[in-house]
Image (cartoon, rainbow, N blue to C red; front, side, top):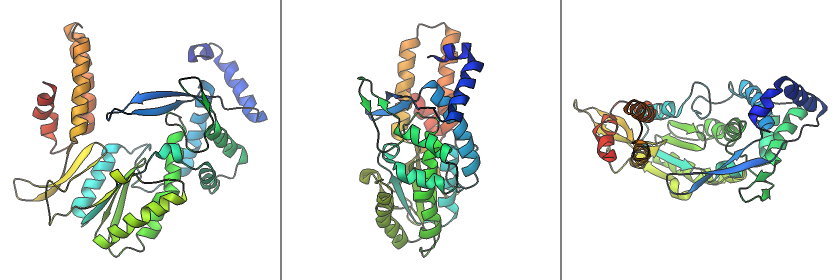
Amino acid sequence: MTSAEYRKNLHANIQDLVERLKRKSYRAKLVRRSYIPKENGKERPLGIPALEDKLVQLGCTRILTAIYEQEFIQSSHGYRLGHSARDAVGELAFNLQYRGYEYIVEADIRGFFDNMDHDWLLKMLALRIDDGAFLNLIRKWLKAGILETDGQVIHPETGTPQGGIVSPVLANVYLHYALDLWFDRVVKKHSGGRVCICRYADDFVCGFRYEEDAVKFYEELPKRLRKFGLAVAPEKTRIMRFSRFHPSMKRRFTFLGFELYWWKDKKGILRVKRRTARKKLQGACKRIKEWVKENRHLPDRDFIDGLNKRLLGHYNYYGVRWNEKSLGSGLIKEIQ
């Protein structure tokens, strides 16, 4: 049933859905699989729930958010009201510049959304939710079959589909217990100097005052994640010296589309600067050039309005101090 058809008898359909939830006869429908291209040429799998599943997931998401928002640590930024990827990058840059960190560990969790352990997730939720019916709803969505593009139905044993309305908050709950609290209560306690973590969804960077603390965390992280069915992506996980005492363009790293590096300004003051990561800039320029090529036939006003919308989306995200070159001449040069 399409959303337009559902809307024609909205009140009756909602009432029927509510009654099925009360009778515990509600069943999660198949999740429709689709794929979207990634900048590296690969495809990202999405799982699109059925209309009624979206409605129930929306209600459950609001309940979960109300419960866990006060629990999540401040440096967890993904999928939270009042937090953004730009906030995460800004917080990280501030901490690295002013808090005396000398080393960073940048890490990436391999296939996080596909590998979340269902049993662990339900145990985590049960720590704060004493409602079997509610937890059973979550279980139904986790176990719902996935309808692939070729018609094959897959019954997942792990993971939650990217594209599900409830998936982001479930992901945050999972990493809150698997990573954030461990870092906050164990890693900090057993470190000889100041440490910090900045996380956006499954992408995170940790700062350390001392090299031995960074090395210890780097060695312990895979063991910790393995306990919860997860693994780091070795090619995207590393320790790096990132210090005002050893500034170098060779010592730079990328986080959420920004490249962070130490640079001396005109007054001779060392600062942690941010600029658009090269691959992100090239990807944005490629998309803009393709749009221009496909829409050059439009009337001038429509063409300008459409182009401005695409440029503004890029500027609104990457428009930070000291990134003028990537937004100005650098962007124009790439597009030409």
